[in-house]
Image (cartoon, rainbow, N blue to C red; front, top):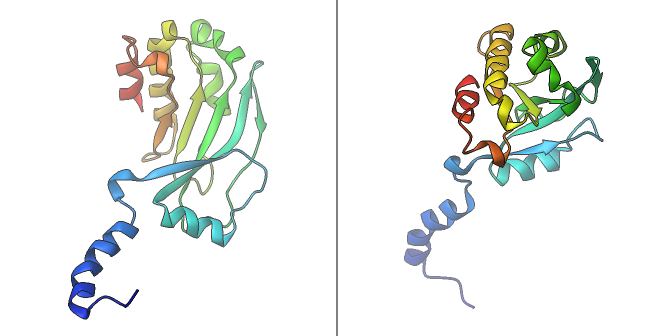
Length: 170
C-alpha cells in the first residue's frame, strides 16, 4: 500500500498519537506479590506504556499472635514507577477487632521506606465493618502525615451499611 498523502498524514497524526497514549483517567496499578525484588527496565517501560501508574508490593503478613512476617520490601528498579506497600492481615486476626478494636495490630504496621503509600488487605466480615473503619482511622493517625492509605474491599461490602465508613477512613 502506498504511503498516505502528506496532508492526510498530518491530519491523522494527532489521532494516531492519542490512540497510542495512555488515558490518564484510566490509570491502573499492578500487584507484585513477591518473587523477584526488582522490575526489569523493560517491564517498567511496558507498564508505563500501558498506563500503569503504580505497583502494589506485598511487604508483610500480619498473623495471629499477633506477629508480623516480612514478605518483601522496596521494589528495586521501579524508580520511575511509584510503589505502595501492601500489608496482608490474616483472617485469624479478625477477633482482635472485637477484643481491642485491633489496636494491638497498629505497632506491626508501619510506613515502608521508599513506598508512596500503604494498602491494607484484610478480609473483614461485613458485621465488623464499623470497627474496621475505626481501626483504619486510628492507623491513619499513626502514619507519617501525608502517607496515602488504601484498603482492598470485598464485593460483599459494597451494599453493607458500614462500607461508607470504611471508604471514608481511607
